[in-house]
Length: 495
Image: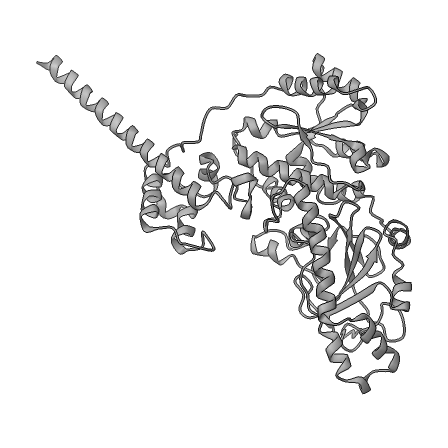
């Protein structure tokens, strides 16, 4: 009898366990379907990375950041859905779906349906793939081939859509560091698309020795002695022909690498030559002759703490935009900081006195380059916070400083921002308050609003075309380079 009772008890326990397993699997399947239907289009599909949340179907990363297994009340994911913060537009998530997600979390957030064991790609396999690619190339091209790897992220369990986010961010950044006339997307050379090849010549990096600076800065720099590795070094004539793509996006989107690869000027004298020789712009002559230049002045600005002036010059490759930024007025040390009172300059008797500036210039391929300077034209890595502040970074709890490259990309995710001039109407409405020369200058350079808007539109459209050529289906508010750079800076998990 005892034997029969024991067997019956074990049978009941087994049935109960199976029922719990089936229930957990069913919950996971339903949760997966809800997340895919309601969230995936903005947070994962085709590499979409809105808000840096491209891991909506990756249970490990959800648990690390947004889901607390067994505690729905403490789970940020559910909190945002319940409050109606997500999705931000369109239909709210139905009550029944919220209840299902709550049950899934309370049940311990069992593994989602898409999660599957992934084959581990060894270093030997990764370098072997590069070697095969090099062996298929001719002797003339091999020295110019370099590689970016996502192999470590693949091995850590990143979903395919997460890896696609990295490919897109890498492509946009590389082309944003290019002096070449065409957009060239890095080419995947393996089935998993974790090793991507570029040709240095496409971006003019062979002329600037950019790769030497990249590998000198690489903290993951390791060379190997096995045969595939040594052959790769030999074929490329390079001691390290590959770097991690996620690190590169982080490091090369900010100084010093951003400055080095784009060869941006660091002194006022070099800055003037850069304008004239590289961009084909003579700023002083344009302002003197009222030629190929337009302006808009306004208060407040998106990043400046005071009024701001932006100025567009026709350049060799499209447009060259300069901003003149001002500290808040200081009663103890008054300067010419008010654009409505001093609308001319930066030189001359009636000139304003600015404290720094941001330069945005069209690259030959249609993307944009960025440069921050002080009021003399000396390059700076970050904008001083008493002049400009990265307000978006402050919202997200990051450093408020405007960092050249990454902060500029993040702000100008759609290209040039819409701005409306406030100086022209003010001056033209008070003609007797200004000298004839100032009045004439404002009338000629601070152009009418439709004219200014048309030039902004022209430059945005050029930029958008170039971005799409990088492999992005559309402009994303969560700019792909900056989003990945910020993600790289987050704490690591065990994987």
